[in-house]
Image (tube, rainbow, N blue to C red):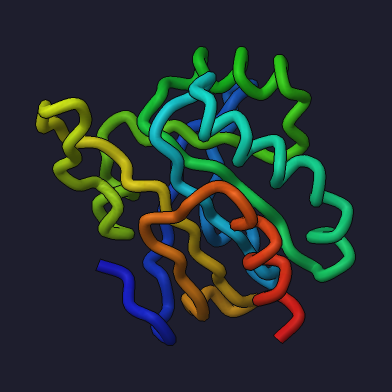
Length: 152
């Protein structure tokens, strides 16, 4: 599992438009990776739109944003288009990257147990080192916390 202040192992996942995106594609930039449970759900939509609305600020800080969930590329295409998301959404249907980051866990909802992504965000520096993590994220105010971390 990824550890703070250590290099993150490279990964590649499919994205919209037949692309594959790798962590190494962002070398030389700060990268915010946010893992979210499901496209088109209220909390995930709010989080994606909050990142979208702050995109220009991330750009001024030499930072990029990517979202990752277990939804397939087709679902990401609809979600990204509907909300005009300016950053890539990556499809982790096999949960390999979610497990690498320790966010694929047993969850409980309405008395049922199931496995899924626990909403989490990671900040990786220009050299590929994990410098900050937010686990079990609450959506309200979260993007502001990430922006503050980019200041420090």
